[in-house]
Image 1 (cartoon, one colour):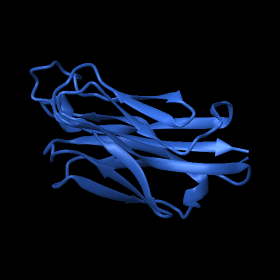
Image 2 (image 1 turned 180 degrees about the vertical axis):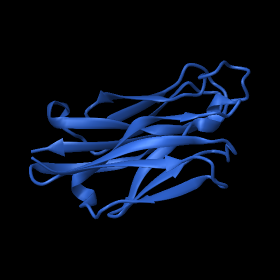
Image 3 (image 1 turned 90 degrees about the vertical axis):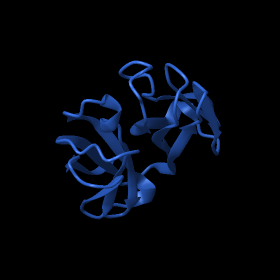
Image 4 (image 1 turned 30 degrees about the horizontal axis):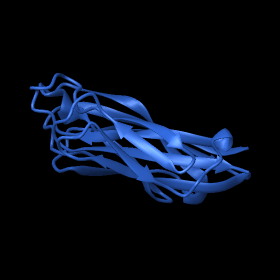
Amino acid sequence: MIKSIQYGVMPTNFGGTSKVSNINAVDPNKSLVFSLGWWHNASDPSRGYYRLELTTSTTVTMYRMADSGQDGEVYFMVIEWGSGVSQMQRGKIDIPNAAVKADKTIPAVDLTKTILAWCGCQAQDTGSTGVFGDHGSLCFVGANTLRAIRRDASLITSVGYNLIEFS
C-alpha cells in the first residue's frame, strides 16, 4: 500500500555538480525516487544529464558531471510505501571509459516482486559520439545482477538506480 507520493522540481542553473531539494520526511527503507525527465537549453546535451538519489529522509540530491550554466529543470517523484516492503536498495553503476556496459552484483531479489527504477545518469559527452552516446540505461541480468549500458564507449557514465522488493 502506498503511504505518500511527493513531486519535485529542481532548477539546473546553479554552480557546482550537486543540488539538494527538500521533501516531507519519508522512511528511506520504504521509499523510491523516480526520475520524471528534464529539459535544458545547453548546447551540449550531456550537460543536462543528471542522477537523482534519496540521500536522507528529507532530501533528494541531483548529481551531474559539470555545471551546465544553462536554464533547465529536473522533475522527480518520491513514493513511500507503508507496508509489504522486504528490502530496498539504491546506488549507482559506473560505466568506465572505453566500455559500453558494466555489471553490479547486488543482494538477490525476487524479480517477480521487485520494482527497478532508473534514477538518471551523469555523463560527459564531447559531441563526437552523437547527442546521446553516453546516455546510460539500466536492466536486470539476473536476480543478483544489474547492468548499466550505453550506445558507445567514450567517457565515464554513472547510472543511478533504486529498487524495492515487496514481500
